[in-house]
Every structure is written in C-alpha cells, then in structure tokens.
Amino acid sequence: MELRKAICNKLQEDNGLTYSPDHVLATNGAKQCTTHAVLDVLSCGDERHGLVPAVGEREDEREREKEGEEGERERKE
Image (tube, rainbow, N blue to C red; front, top):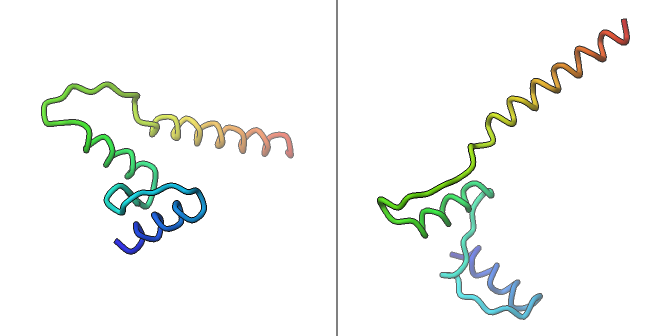
C-alpha cells in the first residue's frame, strides 16, 4: 500500500493527476500487469482472442543468434 500511495503522490506533484491507491496497480513486470488487467475485465466463461505467446519468437531469435555466431566463426577460419 505504501508504494501505491507514493505513486499517487508522485502523479499529483509532478503531473497534477489525482488518483487513490485503490486505482493504482503495481507489479514487477508488464506480463503480470497485463494478466491482472485481463483477469479483472474477463469473467468466467468469457470468450477471448489473443496472439500466440512470444515464446516461439524467442526460440527463433536464439536460433538466428546461433546461426550468426556459427557464420562469424566460419569467416574467422
């Protein structure tokens, strides 16, 4: 609760915006924030549509990095 109060004070002092701590959501990352926001809006049984998680993209990125490293080794040899 102290963190949310501090955020409210900062928003008031620096930006002239007034919020109560009940209107502030503080999380340790964007995924947690998004998850909490979606869970607050959806009800049990609601249908939702979304993108495929980015895990596959990260795997593709790692594969490209690995291929790039192998290409660099070949050029050095």
